[in-house]
Length: 104
Image (cartoon, rainbow, N blue to C red; front, side, top):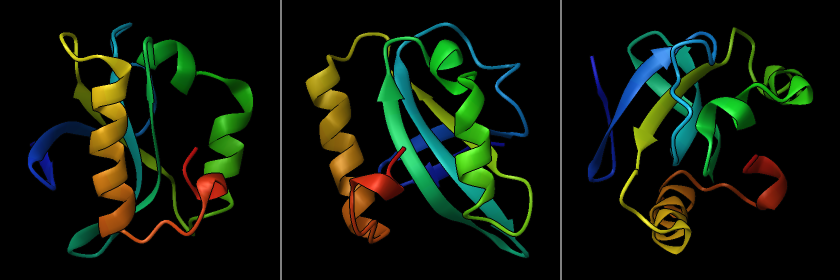
């Protein structure tokens, strides 16, 4: 079932990057908290699967959550990186990411 974040519906959440395509898009790392999801990190990439399989990312996310971090995906095949960044800025503002270190 998709997750609505702002104006967009994200695929997932997924426990690993295994089902994620080698495609451009935005990712949101979330923690499941009873009846809702709490975003803990976000970013964008020209190759989501490659980016999300970087070895140290899951370790960094794990430090921000008591449970297992989950991944939600918004594919943006026809969107330029600058446009993805605009969507991320809205997400960062809405969820009060304090600095770039929180946005992985």
